[in-house]
Image (cartoon, rainbow, N blue to C red; front, side, top):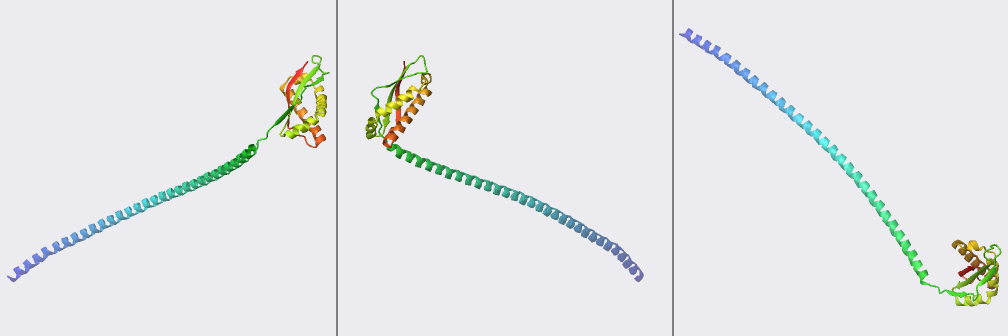
Amino acid sequence: MANIEDDLELDVASEVKPKGNVFKILIITMLGLILLVGSIATTVVIMKGASANTTEADESEEMSDEESEDEEESVVKKKKKKKKKKKKKKKKKVKKKDEKSDGKAKKKSGKIKTPFYHELTKPVVVNLSGDANVRFLQVSVAMMTYSSGDIEEVKKHLPVIRHHLVLLFSSQKFTELRTVEGKKKLQSQALKIIREELTTLVGKPLVEAVYLPSIVGQ
């Protein structure tokens, strides 16, 4: 009986040992799987972190680029504003100058001078030698001053004025006097001569303008 029990115990022990080995193998396998899954998970996490870092870096670069562009735009806008301010200041200065000049002109124009005229009672008649068709030249002469006293002074020296006008008119060519330019030239010459003679006589030119209302050739 004792032998039979010993054999049974040996059989049971031999059956128990294989079961323990299988259990160990299962545990080792599970641990390996757990380690494998853990490594995969950590790898995924690291990859996600790296991608997140790259995206953040890209976003930060984009933000920096946008900020730099915004800064450049703000600088350009500031420059434009400065230019506009300078232009406005220049315009204001020009307006002020114009207003001042207009004010001065108005003040000057406010002092309106009254003209006084004196026309020779008889036209100046001279002989022309340079034109065969026109032998005589008849010119009416009127003088203007800004003072009635100057007119009275001019009247005192009419004989001298008439004498020098005769010398001037007799040297003209009627073909030239037919044009507007010729008439204006004769007018300026008559004014020059009269002012020069009056300056010599009274110390002042007195006459401000000379007009030739009529120029007739015969």
